[in-house]
Image (cartoon, rainbow, N blue to C red; front, side, top):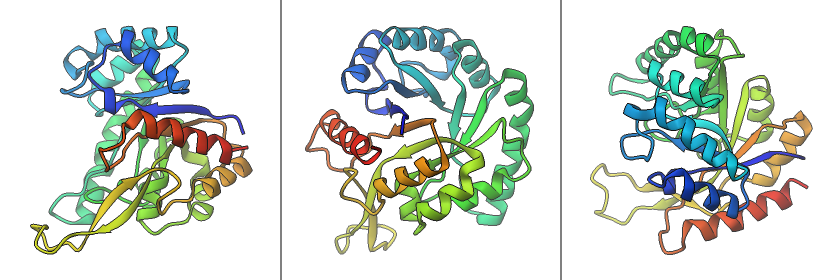
Length: 262
């Protein structure tokens, strides 16, 4: 299968384009998701001016910006439109008032963004995320139900799908009509040492290299091939063990993903 192999540039979020582009291309990626946050090189305050410059600089190095990790304020849509970035990736947060109220609030948030998505021709990609977010593929699909699929997409995530106890042979076909980006990362549940958790949790999420976690990337890529998916596959570069450089782990994981996709 031919995918646009991409990477989330969060580990190098403070780098300018003339350093980020060669780094991403040198690791073997042809696509990138860039964060636009107060701690990033491109901040929300300057995004409409600086994102087009960053995007063009990466394009000069053969790297296409597939999405922006940010928010749904109009300034983000305007920045994406100015830069030719097709999607804003977000997650649906859960509050202390419970799942139902949180999902209702998230749906209203998405509905409010619908006119902006249409006006600027920029998609909204919603990703499941373990923990204090809507964590399952099916939960996100329920949030998106009835919203125009041209503008509202699912960002399927291998690690969070596995952490939710789901199976890509089930969730990917159900999500096929909404698939915008496929994220590849992996994780396990690791025991928490006694007395080390302020909340009393006995297990924590621990992000690991692609071939070591709960998610089976090969199965996911096989299902994507069966579905005829040709969009971006984005390695998130999230690893809990800081002793190995993230660049080294990404090169290994990209090679493993490419082998699995043959």
